[in-house]
Image (cartoon, rainbow over all chains, first blue to last red; front, side):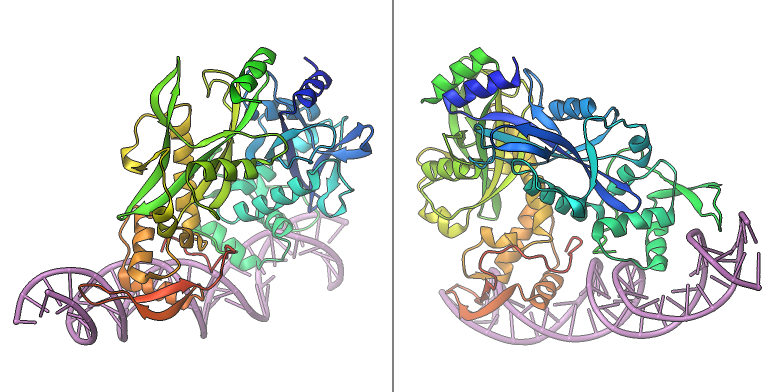
Length: 230
Length: 230
DNA sequence: GGAATAGTGTCTATTAGACAGTATCCA
DNA sequence: TGGATACTGTCTAATAGACACTATTCC
């Protein structure tokens, strides 16, 4: 069944249809970017942008639906995805009653390079256009979640290449927290945890090269002793 | 339209119906309790218990639906309610495809007294029966959320009467965190914040009466300097 | 040698956590 | 006076946060 048919039926029945919307972040050139897709749904949403997403197809969980829709828009596998919140204001979609299960997703620079976003654009979060539906609100919620979570988990690794330097790691924190951090304190804290390991290599640069590190825990999100605010 | 009709239509169309489920906690006799309602839905769920909740009626948000369903089951107003997570595993409801937006709710001893739970029972969380649907999983998620949130917010006030003693407050923390806390350190920390104010009264007891306090902030959930673990 | 970025150590103030005895009320 | 619970203070170890200079690489 096509989405338009769903919409029709749902609208007639006056019940809600469930969909997923995904806020995909990545850090490019020290700026947090969101992935947006064109939206053109007369009569309410004309030539706008919105979040990638879509209906939850038959016999799939919302998680699976989010993964599938993402994979269709950005040709990348193994993306970090976590459920954010569900948005259900009656008028959030002017076309018909619809409920959106929103997801937060992060992609690394490596994935960003591989990705071919023919169906969308990457926009810096402080240069967002006016968005369709309640997608601005969803993005705000995602930013808050990311800000909160980066200080007490190792989630930053989902925004970095496998190998990274400490200055790069620090910049990710600064970009998300929107404030400068002291280099010495930052290094001290991170090196005192067992979160990262030195790789023993460097990259070619036109100045003094930095040591490369990697996260020791492959994928589990662990909680170090709470970092109030770095 | 009745819920059974919804179910029929939804089942025929093979699309998902959205509902809300609410995990209501309260602390009685130093034990965390959950509110459960009888569930009897042949052929899969016979004489079981489950969370209060139900479908999201026409033109209401999930928040409103959760409030309404709660008010029907427990005759109390102004209940604390926050969205927890949305559960959407395809087989979570054996009758038909259904998605549940789960809520966490807290009620105070004052509300607990007023409440007339003719339609359900309060069960200690470590004596839960086997529950219908995926409601055990939802409760686990709610407990985790509560445990996490009590250490960095003033959410405990939603589980206490307007006026309370420091020993009472401490017991709420101990019951939720499931470990004893040092009385002196606990008092020190709480009194060093501006979270609570002394009321200057005591209650009649058969031993030395404790000072009464109240939370200074009416309803907003504020974040004191992070408390790692009390 | 200059440009650019990486890397390093100390001090102070605050906080976390361990720990035991006294005070107050009632019967 | 005994039972029950409320209330109080100190010490130590760890952590947070402020702060400025040296090192390395490339050109």
